Image 1 (cartoon, helix red, strand yellow):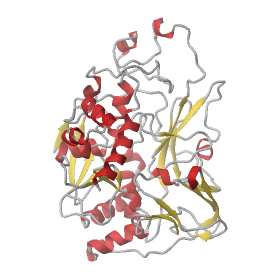
Image 2 (spheres, rainbow, N blue to C red):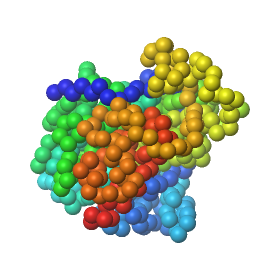
Image 3 (cartoon, rainbow, N blue to C red):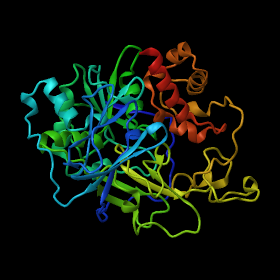
Image 4 (cartoon, rainbow, N blue to C red):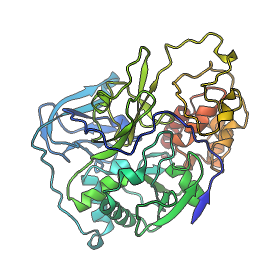
Amino acid sequence: MEIKLSKGLDISLKGRPAEKMGQTAKSEYFVLVPDNFCGITPKVVVKPGEKVLAGGVLMTDKNFPEIKFVSPVSGEVTAVERGEKRKVLGIVVKRDAANEYVDFGKKDIAKMDAQQVKQTILDGGAWGFITQRPYAIVANPTAEPRDIFISAFDSAPLAPNFDYAAAADQEAITAGIAALKKLTSGKVYVGTRSKSSILYPGAEVVTFVGPHPSGNAGVQAHNIKAVNKGETIWTISAFDLILIGRLFTEGRVNFERVIAITGSEVASPCYVKAYPGTPVKDLTDGNIVKADYKQRYISGNVLSGEAVGIDGYLGYQSSQITVIPDGSDNDEFVGWAVPGLAKYSVSHTYLTWLFGRAKEYKIDARLQGGKRALITSGDLDKVLPMDIYAEFLFKATLAFDIDKMENLGIYEIAPEDFALCEFVDVSKTEIQKTFRLGLDRLKKEME
């Protein structure tokens, strides 16, 4: 089956990764950040000074203690970093040279029932990679999803090529799909690009044609079989599917992943192998353009990633690091009045639209204008390939009108689905943040 999406926008940026492997980062410390997992309440189960193996439990979810979050490496817990009101900011593990791991044993998925498969994923600390709709949070392990949707490509700016990154992981992909099929009485769908070199046996493969956000699992689910009130679906990235599959094929936690180092501030954009929680400075060391202006380090893509800074860490669900100019120290005199021959514009404000899609742009993180009144322009709907009135849903969420939110489709969205809307919004509103807060508040009201 093929689905063509006309709405959306591909932003052509400088810093696309070349299909070559850079030097693997040699990191001494790794950090598990609870904020990487939406919807959980962390409970730390280790103390500084304790030794852990790769796959050893560092924290659990207070509401669902069976959901475990584990160390990607073996070593010593050196710190549990906390913020205001003792909020857990991160659990720091110092890696040792032994590289020891918890042995879960290789498993034959065909001989396992659903509960055994679920328990293996929970014990191996990979459950946190599965997201549920509604609410766009870590999946409830006590619920059975109607269907499961896997996105096997990323359409975001400068996103890594999954076929290249996963070239050596066919066995893990096959095992991951087989495991997920045990967890639903419905179907497992895989959204992919045409002519993909990866095989997805046992899954319902759907080919998507169209611009970003066609690679978002939520957008794919909406266009295949939308979720309605009272239904639950699960979504997962194929990058994370590999990590689940390895639990069964290798019998151990192996969270190493191929990630892309991208952006206009990267001297040689490429791919590297890394573990989640790796310090950004170790991943980018020696590969950043020297500049006399501020640079922004992002875990993820420029639209929905998190600005973590040079002292931050690779997010547990991130498959790229992006470095762009920050722009906060750049003041342009009457910048709005110049021809803007090097500036990107969604509309035809600047003459650069004449260059078409071939031109690559160096864009910084500035808002390019102050906040202003919320304007109903229709621009948001032009880049959202979902049968949802984006502006009306956003206003309903701002007002927290539950009836309108439900009628307008709140249960099938995630903040990342509206990242492009935030980019083109002339009102400069924090659309993703508003939806995240609205979904969290709605969950408390409804449960």
